[in-house]
Length: 347
Image (tube, rainbow, N blue to C red; front, side, top):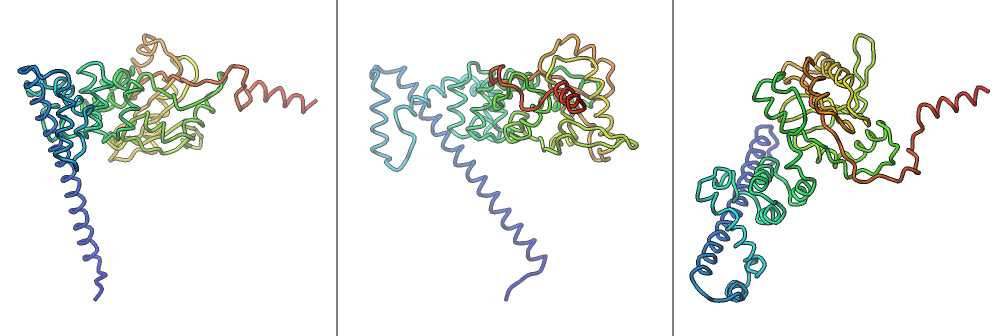
């Protein structure tokens, strides 16, 4: 007899959800137990090396012994044993001091995979930077590839560095999170544009490579539209890029400028943010946030420009790593070139 009732289907979904949850918890538990084993082995190695004179080949000899005794277990190579030792020495002081992020098994060092630990250990220069990436990995569930990208693009130095007025325009709980989603500068190293690119080309390139752009923006951003049309009492306005942020539960208006920041840019973005609040925002949404990303800025000018702005706005720069030589023209003609061609047609 086949059961097809909605109640049965709902029950099956609950069972499946419970199994998946159990699988995830089991996986995390296995990872935690493995890391605690590595920690204990490293602690024993460090203590024995300090107390004995077994020579420089001690770890190599130990590796051979362990691989012979446990042939089905991976992780006992000489290189990995040395990583364990290095990892232990890097974090041991924080563990002994009971540093919360490092020590707690549910949210700390033993909660991220071993491969992630090695990446953080080998690519971070300071303890503060390493802690930052541990926290980001846990919060955003970074894969190893994404973690490497974030470290190599120096997220630590760019995160939350944008000039903004969030503290005065948002409630404290939203302000703190909103500041964290901003970077300065944004790295568009995945783009290749000519030196004469314009704003439409930058916008098109970012939306064409939306996966990379969302990765640079950070977790929580959901893309709504490009050149998003807003109708305000019969007048049409177009937002460069519109997003919705899941964690902040608000719309995010992103405006792109390929020139140095000008005060009038803040006024334009202020209008767009207000219009989204009036035309799109529901009663369940938090206040809309504006992000202006420009080629360069004078920080003092930005601070003055934001002082009397009514809506929450952050201003950042962007940087391009790849640029075609100046002799390669932009794919789109300039306004002046279009006007000149129209004049020739008229003649």
